[in-house]
Amino acid sequence: MLQRRGRAGSRGFALLIVLWTMVLLAFIVAQLVAGSRTELKIAQNLVDNAVAQAAADGAVSEAIFKLLSPADEGGWRLDGRAHVVVIGDSRVRVTLSNEAGRINPNLASPALLTALLQVTGSDPQTAQRLTAAIEEWIGRQPVVGGPAAAFAQYRAAGLDYGPPGQPLETLGELSQVLGMTPSVFAAIRPHLTLYGTAEPDPRAADPVVAAALALASPTLPQSPGFALAASPSPYPMLLTVRIIATAVGPGDARARTLAIARVGQLVPRGYVLLSRKARFG
Image 1 (cartoon, rainbow, N blue to C red):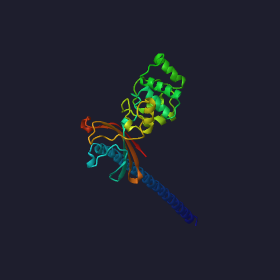
Image 2 (tube, one colour; image 1 turned 120 degrees about the vertical axis):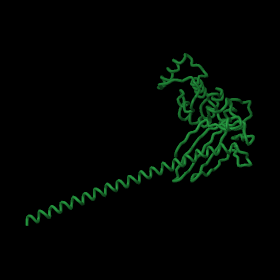
Image 3 (cartoon, helix red, strand yellow; image 1 turned 180 degrees about the horizontal axis):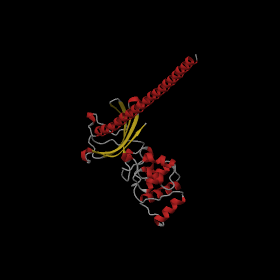
Image 4 (cartoon, rainbow, N blue to C red; image 1 turned 30 degrees about the horizontal axis):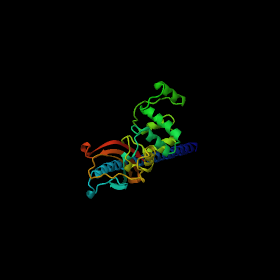
């Protein structure tokens, strides 16, 4: 009798081990399946993002081609209209603007920089102080006391750097200028470029730049408002264009490319990309 009970207990214990083993295996399989699904979803998202980004990049090339095409052949003009391009499974909204309508802080006069700061909300004293700091940063105005004095001013403000005395390589550098606040920088940045001339084209200026031009040069005729300068011919001699392509692709993936291109007869092969920045989401 005791022997039978021992055998029954052993079988019950073995069955319990088998059941627990099956539960453990089921748990492991479930985790593997869940992990595989997550990895597949991540992989699909990456693919969708790549497709959308490729479409945005392709739309930039399409925009350049359209700018160089005659109007009667579907060419695009700088007339303020947005264009929609379908590339594969993605829809891309493309906007174009004339970069000549923006202010180049590397070349603009101090009066124009001060005027831009004022029309975007800075008081006259702050605008003049920031303009002087920008001029020192890009090396157009020497610092009283030399570089050591400049570094001392920045250190006194809690900064561990000083003005390089060289032209800006990126607009983001302006945020490091002594006295520049995030709000002031955010207000002026949309109206700036590093690819324009010393004097913006008033025909292509937005209302803020037009107001700054009027304030800096009261003798200039005031622009009635935003007016993009349309290229005068199907094959412009030279244009510097800002192209923004926003794509919505498979799985609602979104990507954006901002490119600056110089196009026209004076450019080898008709165009050259000066800048290209991509961003997902």
